[in-house]
Image (cartoon, rainbow, N blue to C red):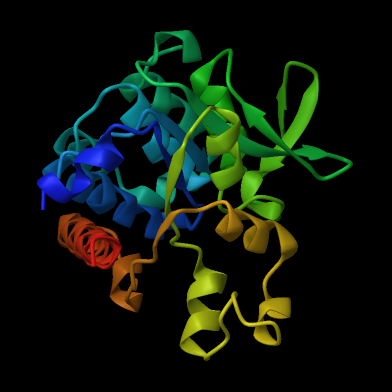
Length: 248
């Protein structure tokens, strides 16, 4: 399998990580599987929880280090902005300039609800802004901008990968709505059922070369190390399956 990915590994690979709350733990399994076959991203983008995992990847952390980071906290506490920023300050570099890979955290600028890619400045506030879930958290004010959860207008940041210079985009989609729609038989590529998906999501799929959609079970929402390991395993297995289709 390594030989089959030789040409792909020569490209500038972008890794786009979707929003999806605790479902984002499966992103760790995605980077684990990509590492196992020798595919390393050149650029990383993330929305909401994807921004937290993506920042860790861009900082140079290995998948197992990210897993240890995830297991070090009771995950629902990260819904609190202050705790999330403290968590980032403890585990991640202070600024974007200290990252090893180009990285963008996607947030929604208010009041015009425009997606913005944050690529500079303080990392903890960028991740916090990208994760500022509507209804649950107040906007994050950053450099004069009022920002909320990036998933409102760009849940799958494939386009941002292209903007950072990616030739080939691998997207990990753990968004709950897309999962529900797929289970109901509505496919984004279908002319009829595609209308159930927001335009920003459909455009992201068009800019994605390899789509990974881990099937997250309801039990995955439970906190604890067993759930984390289960979610990582699901992400890993889904990635290997997607890669096997790629080389057929």
